[in-house]
Image (cartoon, rainbow, N blue to C red; front, top):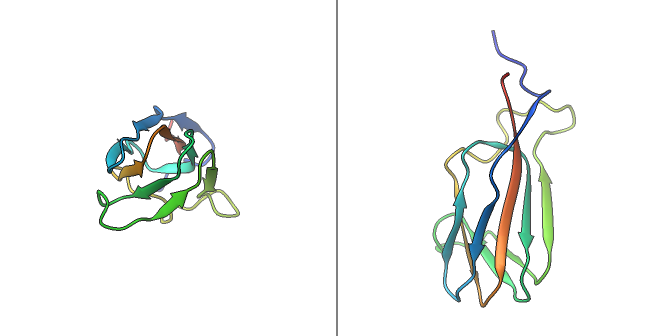
Length: 107
């Protein structure tokens, strides 16, 4: 029997990377997120990649944040989230980029 884990949230440690002008590791997901926040805290645009810079997923202008709610309309979307272990990389001239997320808990 499947466990309904859509009712309790766990708070993961924030992932933060300092931009240096080339791709740097921002961090790796320790859990699969339910809601994830991408936040460019710097004054320069930052490119985000999940393959160490081979492909740019999205470019965040200076100061922009994006919230992705991966729960779908009813709160149960076990097949639609980022995989645990996904690493995010950023490339920007300066500043910091952070990724914060919550995940579903089983207990």
